[in-house]
Image (cartoon, rainbow, N blue to C red; front, top):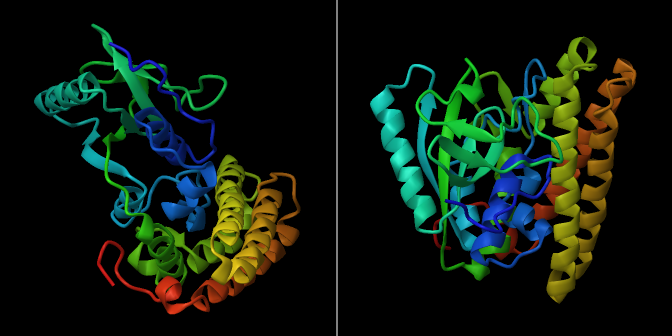
Length: 311
């Protein structure tokens, strides 16, 4: 069984590759920038206190789901599994994933990375490759039962996707309120040992001297720089669509493009640690300024409120 035409775009932010691939397959037409921006992911930054590469994966998704739903995609968490999960639990999950695929609905798996599931055969699930070549974190298949391709360290979540009626009027305001919330109330979104928003930059600055040449430093830089560049592109789209805020949106586009460029720069393992710490401090200030600009947009866009509720 195979979902013909299901593909995963090669974003560094593999979660957004999964989301955008599912959108494309089920016929939700939106730009890459709008997918990142409308879902709020363009504004996320999450950094572990030791700068490990888990930052892009270990954060609270509960406020992310309704933002994705605004775009017309229902994203359902099918369950979390570990190496110790019972065979019966795994078998039940496998049957549910097969049923979703048989109904033409894409599914995905997240362990060390995010991959779309495009089908299955008698031995296991068939997984999309987010990048040109397969690596240890992105196996080509997942064998039924113990899922040995995921190795001994299994922290696995499965998702399914289906088309939903979009809420176009909420896409921009809800995502911008989320952007403000991430920066102003980071503790509400983060997990132990991780920092979001300004706390992410504080963690990065403290860890840069010891871990600034690590794979984790590089991967965080690559993912979060991509997100900020998508934020820049999305504000450019907003500027073209909303004449009432075209000026401020254009300024925000330029601001996030510069932030994205600096994040890409500190991704370098070779960059001097002192310079890296200096740039991280500058980034925190630039994000503070950008969020302040979002807060100064008209009340319907900038006012903070719970995502998913009515105004």
